[in-house]
Amino acid sequence: MITDGLYSYLYAHAAITDLVSDRIHPIVKNNDTLPAIIYTRVSTVPTHTMSSSPSIAETRIQVNCLGETYQAAKELADVVRQAIENYSGNWDGETVHTVMMDSEHDSYDTRSSNNKNNESQRVFGVHQDYIVWHSL
Image (cartoon, rainbow, N blue to C red; front, side, top):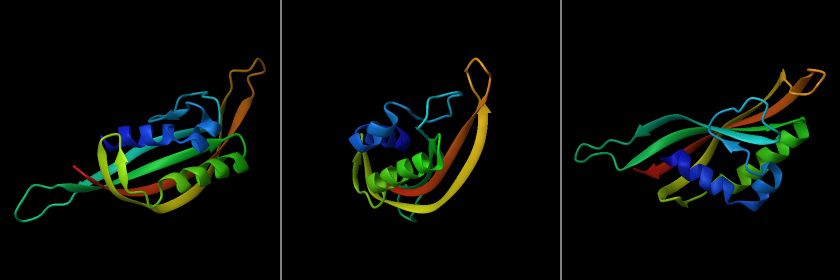
């Protein structure tokens, strides 16, 4: 699956793991240490032809870069973008033809904390949508 390949690719980049260690997940883990990356496959659209089964697809993947400060989230998002935008090659056995950023937006939220005072933790996010053209 293309998201498994994305995970392996991100995890292999020292510039990314220097910032997040092993905190690269397909779902949000409550109270995970920040910064962290959460990725989600939004959709996959196979490219059909009249004469054969689909051999390539367009997959939209959202990459959420989370940090305790806006600057930390933005720095992480910039490193992720440098690693995957315009990439072509192989993601853990998946042939990737190209990766294009489609959109980006920022967010801010709070979540409960595990500390003794039960204070809320601020979570800043930069959310990037990528279009990945890949072989099926």
